[in-house]
Length: 371
Ligand SMILES: NC(=O)c1ccc[n+]([C@@H]2O[C@H](COP(=O)([O-])OP(=O)(O)OC[C@H]3O[C@@H](n4cnc5c(N)ncnc54)[C@H](O)[C@@H]3O)[C@@H](O)[C@H]2O)c1
Figure 1 (cartoon, rainbow, N blue to C red):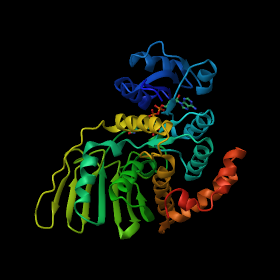
Figure 2: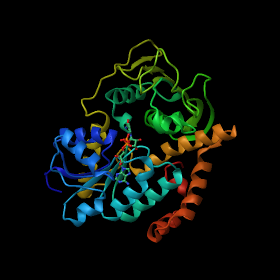
Figure 3: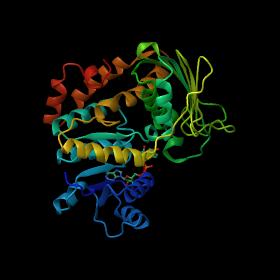
Figure 4: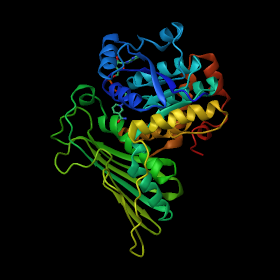
């Protein structure tokens, strides 16, 4: 690919869509060539507010491509239930996609998208924006100096009054929020989750219909334990939106309050400095990694960016496993979640070419990196 900016069509112009328009506008490596929303008035208004007045607008990517708009990739900022139809249509049209988290509402739909990406040969990457905090980069380097990790914990305490769909859903904290910390745990621990026990509950004063609090214990590979203690209805002394973290390792410990530079100390009392890397943060970080990956792959390099679809499935599976454990009161293995989802994905798949890819897998657990 030449050195010109990567030409992007963005799908979804709601609340988060506006943040993505700002990120695209601020990155000279990319260029907005189209904006899609089911509601074109919403798209017109968001485009104008972001300084993109005059950009082509439509209700589907296929309309812009048919009209001759030349694009290199798509950014999908629609609601989770629209991720599967939008992503699979774009992949089938031969374009790579950067999709907002969560990849889907179910692991079965995630597996369908893994197969669709394989079938198309195009990159599908999920933007897990919390991986791109500079402090997370610093913490990963500090942890590497502390030897093998045994324990990781995240305390998450907030008290937002969102209203809307979050006030009505059965597991608002686990389904709408915890994926951020679950995915971050994988990134920081550097191993994969194998099983979970979860207790989900709703305090008597909660303003949510569903459970706004949860205590969750994950088992990870090599015996690492990750404990998540979260709530969306605990006013006072709130934590960062990233949560407050602690790690216990063979040669020391590390703590991160979620906002400032992490602290780490070795067993002989020496501080391990947390040097913040000079890199773009949050969605600007995932956009930069996606643009690099698209260019590298076009040049024939086999790069696997953070959030590449195969590698993201286990983050969605952690949510599904925690919900199943909360519902049943028993420990749930991630392997069970993945195998059950695979059976459902095979049953549900309506695209014969994608179904053939699904059926060709000899081990779905290998496909998603569980074994
Ligand atoms: N990274 C973060 O911290 C973060 C924060 C908020 C939201 N999000 C994620 O961003 C995504 C969007 O959230 P939001 O808050 O902007 O939602 P929203 O409801 O405000 O906006 C979604 C927009 O997508 C449009 N849309 C829905 N289906 C479509 C389709 N099939 N084709 C075209 N347009 C379609 C809707 O008309 C709407 O304008 C979600 O996946 C959400 O989880 C991430």
